[in-house]
Structures are given as C-alpha cells and as structure tokens.
Length: 250
Image (cartoon, rainbow, N blue to C red; front, top):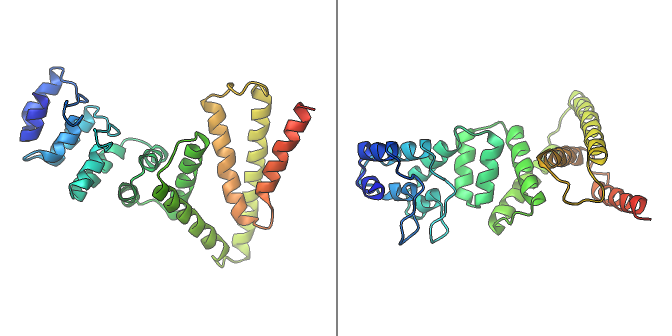
C-alpha cells in the first residue's frame, strides 16, 4: 500500500501509513526499490514525498537491483533537480565530513558536485574535508570507483599547485611556519598516544579513537607536505616504519 500511495503522490496517505507502522525501507520484489526510489516516479508532490520519507528514516544509501541509490536513479531518469534535492535533504542534518565521506564512497561525480554546490564551503575547508574523507576511505580499504579517485586526485593536485604558486608575502610564510610547527607537534603527540595506548603485537587492537588519531596524523602530514616539498616525507614515513619493525622485532 505504501508503494501505491507514493506512486500516486498521495502525501496524506503516505503520512498515515508511516504513522501506523509501514516500513519506510521496505523493498518491492521486482526492482528491489524502496519508497524513496519510487518517489521519483510519483505523479505529483515529488519533493514533498522525498522530504517526508527522508525525515522518517528512509535509507538514502539503499541500492536497488541495478545497484543504484534513489538519487542515482533520479540522475538516470534525467531528473537532476530531484537528485540534488535528495542530496540536500540527505545531508542537511549531518556534519560536513560525514556528508562528503558518504558521497565520495557512493562514487557518483555529479552527486558529489551537487554536494559541493549545496555546502558552498570555503576553499581551504572543503579541501581539508575532502582530504580527510578520502584518507579515511583509503585507510579502511574501501574500494572507490576509478573516475571518483581520479577526480579527487586532480582536486588535491590542483590544491598543491595553488599552495606553491599563491605568491604569498613574508607575513603569510611566517604564519605558515607557525602553523606547520603546530601541526608537527600534533603529529608527534598523536603518534606518541598510539604507541603508548595500543598493543604493538595485536593488529586487532584498533578502535574508533585509534582511527581518529591516525586520520588526524594523515591530515596534518598532508598539509605539511605541501609546505615542505623538499623533504621526502614518504621516505621518512617508510624509514620510521622500518625502524619500528627493527626495534620491536630484532
């Protein structure tokens, strides 16, 4: 009954059905669509149905038989405005980092560009969030679609170029040095916490705090790398790892 009400665009009936226990994430048998997928084909009240379903807990990451989320299905049907509206509603009540994390993982460039347009963050803030989300996904070995990975790498490479060629004066360079010293201290402090708080011989001794500290280390290294390109930081990281192996496994 919920699918039929959604398809008809009957907002009032959909509300009543949800109020009386209808499962907002129920799937149809033929296409494995949820009510949110079906809202794309509603005869009327599409944006209002999307608002209602998402507010009632519709899973925006649910995939149908074609492995499409509802927003991706909207794009496939050339309903870009509806897809953007879904992204707006999906991300308006979650923090920016999680929003970018979810959209990068989803792997659709157009949806990510919708998110960038919706959030309208400052350039540096946006780059920081993208770098952190990308780093966490790589750290967790989450496979990314090739075109998404290429897009993210291009963004970060362009950011590197911007940093090198920004033409900042002496005052800006001094501020950068102060910030980099702070970042180096943060890296050292977080590495020290990881070394002292976790079992060196138990690879399963990992929790959310461990991942948070590790992502913070990577985030700070990312920015320092841009300022000190003459330092072979990748080699330094490798040597530190080799030294720790030698130290604990003689």
